[in-house]
Length: 293
Image (cartoon, rainbow, N blue to C red; front, side, top):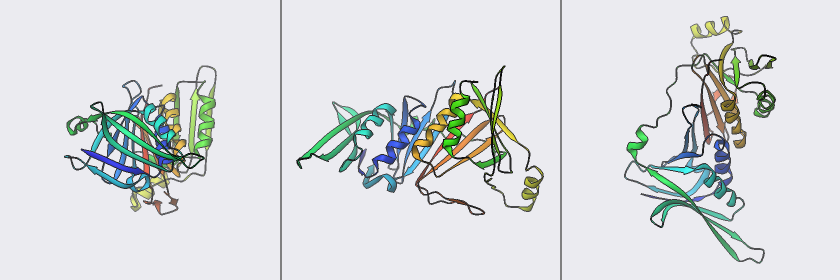
């Protein structure tokens, strides 16, 4: 099992790791020949899961990976440790990332090269302890299979949603997210004393069925709102995705089941009638289970 590469975009990787910082203490790093995946499965009480992927070309150069299992490597790591190491690499002249052993224990090693004001080369090595997972262990870790959603809609600007959620978080531990097929989203929180709803309009709906019958159904039900009630803490955790400066976020509402947020990073675009373009460098998918009010 071997892995070594030049980390050419440490800032992007840092921003992805910062997005998951509030989710859990540890995560799984899955390295494949084409993509880097980070997976977070929180505790049973929370139920939130994050599945992310970033293309290798967006992060690395001279990428070399080798393993007995389809050239894939699975590592469990401390989010805080990797975040600290990546912060040390910001602005470096060159950073090499490799899987090695220190005192017979596996580590993900960042070799960070810089230059002093006098022109002398400075080399800093940051070791992130990891636990190597076997393919058998990974078989039980699978992305959730969810039913088709009733509505898919582009989210409002994340800063606007964060501002609303920060004000609402002291008013209740549940938040109701509702959307219709007319480009509207509602975010509501209620307790015994107050009931507050914020409305967003003029958003774009996505349709994954272009048949005439489906379009007629959409037209008839355009004003009908579909709602999912989730933990406020989980909603705030999703909003940490602002770190990756997403181009687009799609909200999928599956009533009585989950909210699914698709956060697209990189050069993703969206245009009327064209749907989501495929020229993105990665995505973060948040699965947020519903909670009873």
